Length: 303
Image 1 (spheres, rainbow, N blue to C red):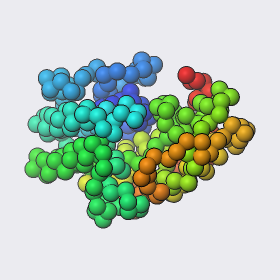
Image 2 (tube, rainbow, N blue to C red):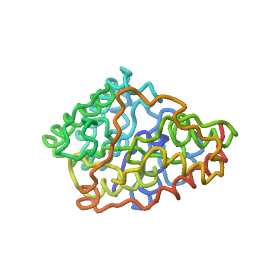
Image 3 (tube, rainbow, N blue to C red):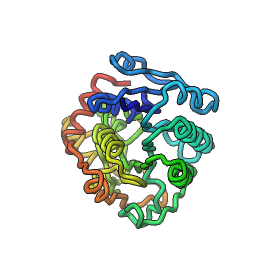
Image 4 (cartoon, helix red, strand yellow):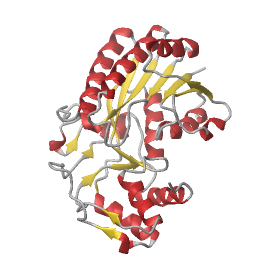
């Protein structure tokens, strides 16, 4: 029996990945510390409340489950705070404890969630093994440092290891202050959506595709960093306009109403050749369909 632990299971990506793992025949053990209760009604899932930041709970959790696989998403994610918070350093320590405990208990395959913020964004088109790794935030520094330690440790411990660098996910359950939900919620409330110029080019992918990519990565045996992204460049303005058109509220969009962050990069897009070829995975949700389903979700979850 393949027994997988998913950390951060009540989070934005974790909650979407659980049913996919069950469909693949995994025995799923979902770790959470805080999170909505309604997702815990799913039958066949083993839920574990665990504060991974506490070493003893971290160790006992792994020993109790004795997993063959692990997908590690748990991290500090408070919007706008996580870029510079010292909580990032605590999560490096907790993640290393988790992986060391996993290896000690005979774990076979570990996939951890990284970020495109590990790269030097000035290059725009970001490719594993080619683009320099030069993070400019504590969040990116901590993720990149963890990846380097994790990779070397896994080789010594005999654990198959991969690192999924997430770019720009969107979809149901995303933090309301992020771009897509903030525009949708403003329009649902008949309020102006105040935006930047919108000329930034980014690589957005629906959260269900992000979850699906991680499941494929877990099963593939591919090792090392892999970009988790669509590979399709899209202007922020296009996303905003598509939302407005789907909702019939173009008159509420105000571009250039707020300044773009100073020194913001104009282009951040992933090279997804490794994901497409070595992992054998490609996205399924087109942007318009993904935004439509996200709008429908927010209609029933308006804050």
